[in-house]
Amino acid sequence: MKKRSNDIGGGCVEERRKSGSDGVEECRKSDNRMVARVRGFWDSLTGSRRRMEALCKNATLDMDYITYISVTKKNNSILLISAAAVLVIVVILEITGRAGGAEAPDLSRGAPGEDSKNLKLKVTAEYKDAKASEDAVVRILPGTLGEEETEEALEDLAETLPGLVLAGNADAESISSDLYMPETDPSTGADISWSSSDESIVAEDGKVNIVGAEEGTEIVLDAHIRLGSKTKDVAMTLVTGSLPDGTDTSKMLETRALEAAESVSRGGDGNAVDLPGEWKGVKLSWSQPSSGSMIPFALAAAAFFFIVYKCRFRAIEKRIGIARDEIEREFPNFLGKLSLLLGAGLTITSAIERIADGYEAVRERTGRKILYEELASVRDRMKASGTPLTAEFAEMAKKSGLKEVLRFSSVLADNIDKGSVLAEKLDAERELLWETRKKDAEKRGRVAETKLVFPMALQLFAVIVVTVAPTALEM
Image (cartoon, helix red, strand yellow):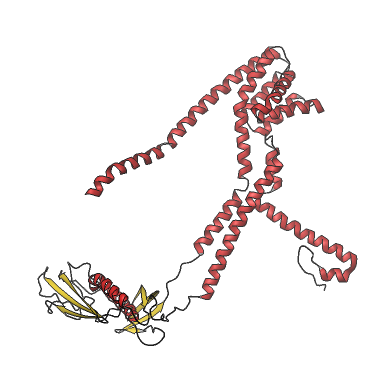
């Protein structure tokens, strides 16, 4: 069996070597077929050129549509390639992210004098049948703290300690569960000693017992903080709340998980930090939070690709619609000119030729108009091949798809030899078209008014906000 390669540009090298000229010719045909398939597939994705040409040919669209089609397909190609590239990149990132798994956290300490680093970890705590997960930040301190860092750490701790002490309590005015009163600050390593104004209600280890205590009893906690040679005292006033109905296991587990994370931040010996597997009788597992899936981005890229594919003929169809609208606007003026020339004694053929000649004389000044370009084409075909006028306008009505042109073609076919009667009917048709245009303009005006309701409502809302905001801020 002959060995063949599938490269499109210069494939079949082995077969060319072994089979002579016949093999080379067969290989070239195979390569050409492959190239044709690839081009055909891409042509269908970006919009079939044959279908676009058929749309332009079957519509009254006097323009260089070959160039316009090329520009449209080029724009579609850029959009499709962009969407496909984004989709491929997202899929690769998703696959590599899943295959590589989560990276191991860097638990090494920095050199003395460097800034501490925060490591975001996911802590999962399990106890019997209960389980809870928390995102925690582990602060890995450098070897030692400088004097300025020590003072700054004391000030920060003095500010944050009242909030940390509350633990699971909502605020300092309704204490009903145990407090968090560590002997060592996990973030700085500072030693903390506690004293309570009433140890029967709040003990020095943070245990809270409000049974028998009146609701609203004030307890003063004093914290004496020592970090190196520096010290600072913090006084906190707490107020007891009502007795809780039961114990919330999940809250306890969340507290234990955070306590464990804070204990890791406290320090230890060695060049790396050890993550405990158990803390106060609670099993712990550590992992870094997921950075998020790339699947939504992949779906968005795929949706964008699909939208571009489905709308690949939209530009051509929109251009055809614009051409038809232009013909519809110009047609009453054309009927008025034609009726005037017929009343002056010209035949229908001479009148159309006069209108086309007059348009060409002023085209550079007024710009191209599709209806009159089509009339000039009708005049040229009639002179070149002798095509009947009625047949030309029947074809024009079919291409434009406009009922106004179709009615004119029918009137022209029925009264081609009746000059005065044809002029009267054209006047009547022109009046009908003007009335139709007036009604259409009124309809569009009403639609425009409806569309303006939402912007006007937004403006009114903005005015209300600007008016009310100063008063609301002062309250």
